[in-house]
Structures are given as C-alpha cells and as structure tokens.
Length: 180
Length: 180
Image (cartoon, rainbow over all chains, first blue to last red):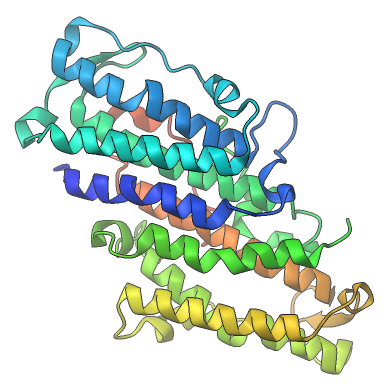
C-alpha cells in the first residue's frame, strides 16, 4: 500500500485540537479516573502522547535518516508519562502536547521527504528492520490507539450509570488490548 | 452510583467540537472508508449521531416525562444514518450535528431536572423499565462508543501501512463490538 504522507500529516495535525476540544475543562470524573489498578487515566494518556513527541517519533525518524540500519532505536519507556504529568494540570499537558506536535510537524515538513526517503530503513529493538514510512504511519495510528483508549476509559466511568444499556454500548464490551 | 447531570452535559457539549477538530478537512481515506462489507465509515457514524439527536435521546426523555412507563419508546432505526448522509458532505454533517446537539442541550437545560426527576421511569422496547438517569447517561456514553468506533475505523485504513508495529497498536487488535 502506497503511503501518502500528506494524509498522515493531516491526522497528526488535528489530534491536539481534537483532544483539546474533548477534554479541556471536563470534570475530573472523566479525566482522572482509570479502569482499575495499573491502568491509565485520560491524564496519563495525554502525558504518554507528550513523551512520544519528545523521545520517540522524530528522534527515531532522525536516526533512520542519519544512521539507517546501523543503529537500533532506543526502546520507548512506557512509563515516561509519569515524568510528564508530575505537578501539571490536564490543561498544561494539552498545551504542551499541542506545542510539541506543532514543532515536530514543522521539522518533518522541513525534511521535504520524497517517496524514496520513505523507504529508508532503520532498526527496531524488537522488530528488526522497519521503514521510515512504517514509523510515520505508526505515529498517526498511535494517536488513534490512544483516542480509542481515551473513549474506553471515559466510558468505563459510566458502566453502572447507563443501567441495562451497557449491553448495547460497544465501547463497554471492549476489554482493551494490552494497555492501549 | 449517583448521576451528576452536569458531568454528563459537560461531555455532551464537547463531542461536536471534538469531532469537528478531528475530522473537518481530513482526506477521504480516513473518513469515507469502512472496515469491510456492512460496516460503517466515519461519515456513516456522524450521520448516525445526527439521527440520534433527531429521533432518539430527547424524544425519549420527553416521553418519560410525559407518559412514564405507560408508553414504550419507538425502536431506534439503526439505518437512519443513510437518510441523514444522502447528498451531504462530511462538513455539512458536522455542522448539522453541532446545531442539533446544541438545540437539544438547550432544551435539556430548560427542563431544570432535579435528582428526583432523574429517577422517573420509562419503558424500553427490549429492556423494559429504564430511568431518565440511565437514558441521559447512555446519551453521553453513546458518544464515546462512536468515538471509539471512529478511531478504530480510521486505524483500520493504516493496518498494512504500519508494518510490524500493527502488533503493538491496541486499536488494531479491536475486533469491534456489534457494529459500534
């Protein structure tokens, strides 16, 4: 499947505003509660998205362009969100996510990648060889994984409140898929 | 669990703007494709949300307040989105959803419901007796079910493009739960 980078960037551009419109000012019942022990709240998820902007997506893209398969990506620290969230409000995290995403997309545009650049290869610690195309498509799909998780974590808070309708609400049948 | 109606309305108020920020102007790869035969595209889902604003949530709330358990709700036509979407653009549907939701929330606020009103009962064609509280909580959770579905339908379009990362992306493990 041909990868249309404009299409990927169109989604990456919109995620911060979508989360902002959904989450800013919402009561904490929706944003600070999780699905049980060792699961994430919406607040945690936004911290994780920030962490990805800092240490995952563009650093890995740069490594592919600079070093190809000769260097292996740093493993992504799935607890990095704890560092990002400490002492902050959700509103501060939403601002920070929007700022970092905008900077990263600015850098990505500046690279003026062509189709042949998208085929350049890097080395993932678990998967082995991956392409820049796959990395950038994953960046956008990772946004969707966490939008999927956010809607599920929020819906969980109303599991009892909806009464018998819980049987009809698909999101309440979703058991989650790993932690995301 | 006590139902805080302000909390429910805070979410209902935000959904149209969140969908607008996520979807307006997105390439059609994201918005017009589905998950296979007899499944919904993002466009279909927004049509379904409009249909709910017209024929489901507030009409049922009014029926509970006016007729209690003596009248059974009309079954919800799950193909009503086809009628809503015909000849329209996604942008028109987003505008229509925002307008109808705003009108409905205005009407809901005007009812000045108290805690005892939330305990009033109606009759659902499949579940039997339900409360106004459960109906209104379901309205908000139904938004989340379809945000969950939208993120999954969009991610499906990149299932191949992400390469080996598909194993790590939770949304791609989600098989869906009924059609939502």
